[in-house]
View 1: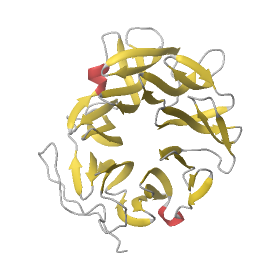
View 2: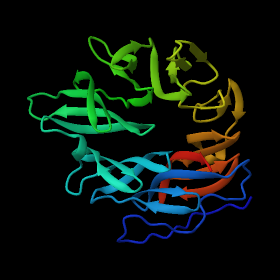
View 3: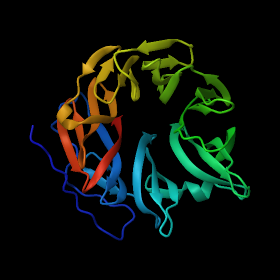
Length: 330
């Protein structure tokens, strides 16, 4: 198939801009009509692409913004990103719903506590959840807390004291909130919280959480191999074929997982990857079609979008990057 280069025009002075150059090749074989969303950065601006249109996101004066995660639900487009202040090196978590920007640092901070990082978000029905860290403003030593917000209402999960260097992930099912994160005490323990109750997974490092209908899975590595646990049933699965599971996805009760290099379906190799197109940043499966974002390079790299192994788009890092993927059935 003919390679499609991204040559997307950027116009200034607008909050949200679209252009007509193709990102997704509509001739790529799929079973049904879908919308493919890819989030990332283009020319130092946070953005996403929907099929063949680029949408630039309002930065609100924050510099070098990047869109890190995109979710489409109920015909709404949700994007989580990060940027840097104009006069300091302070970072600002940013959130867009249908292109409207919310600075999460200002909106979620209080007089007593400042939001330091938002590491993940989730949309469940009409509810939006964020997870991250806060820090007390007036104190002689560093005092951090792990917290989540449901529609802007904060719940403290754990007071950490010193900063804990990890990136909590969040899922919500039937008003139960699951967070993959570390615990602290005499020792740092790895595991997950279920409505603030911590469960340790010995010798594990969790990468994230996934949902299959009403069941929630935690995944990552344990005992030097790939590992995942059905939190709902308590069933644990070792997957020694990979060193670690970096992402997991379900379709029609089939479990797909990746170790960055390849994708496995129900424990069997499904997509051997394409070394020339680099490591898998994100992937989705819909109607047995495989959508992937990959990156390759050392000093410089190129981001690729592939559909069923066929290259649909590429973007060199001199122009931007692809970071997150979402696919919606029409």
